[in-house]
Image 1 (cartoon, rainbow, N blue to C red):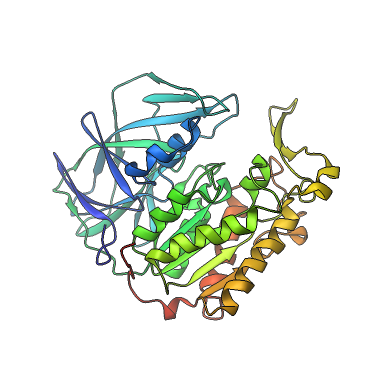
Image 2: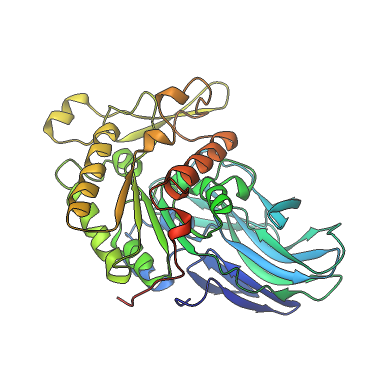
Length: 404
């Protein structure tokens, strides 16, 4: 990917497609797999890094764009569903859109299941079938561009494309490129539809080409993620940080701010002038003022409750809470803005805060449902990218990139 292009053309036996929203393609038996961290960085993953490897391979925000005159389009795929420990995982779907309107959906088949330990030190793949055909029927007659959003919580191997008429890769949209990095609340595996992922909602409203680096449980200010962002085209960048670091108790009051500065410094090697929106975390009801580590409680009704269960006394000894992290994130923006950097702060409580609890309770006390994700997407589009927002869409150029 270069500064002049968004995505790349992928040639398959039955036709070609433009693939967008990924940062690398991995060769797999019979095809390719889009991933969201370039493979040359994978050697820097932690030794117990199977969770990160799986999550970075899941297809949140990744999409195919193709031109056809046919009434039917089909993908030959191999879908690997991710199972982390005993935590229930939702089923996601493929979504086909024309001009932003959904015209067909299809559930992601279970060809393989990747069982990953909670600690991330072990992963085993169980094969059920070699591949499946995912079909989108009754498409409108005539020339059209079909965009297929891949299921956001699934690893997708693309093997072939076809239909009842030739399929060709669509041209670039020409829209500005937006890179977003965040936690599971940006990865958004809970909704059935990948078009319910809140950065996808925001991108559709604002008219941007999205690269969604939302990594469930893995937003840790990793240097290789910063380097990945620095090396990719971007006209606007947003980072939403705090909840994974607090939940894993991976940093404290002493280390969080310097680590965040260091992450931003690495991003700036490739994007010295690109506008950045730095957002803090949304509300974590009941856990906002309690330090990590986090835990999962399995409820009698089959649900789960995610919460922090650290010792409140540790706050006085330097432990970080989610509420405190918001002040630290705002401090980083203040320091960098005062030095002339093109950066703005967005309070996560403006996306979901105490006033929203009654209308939008969180099913597992941490993650939104599809309706709330859509609301967060609308709010971010207005607050960050609207004409009165932090980075108005009308001010964005096209694909600025400086090689680090």
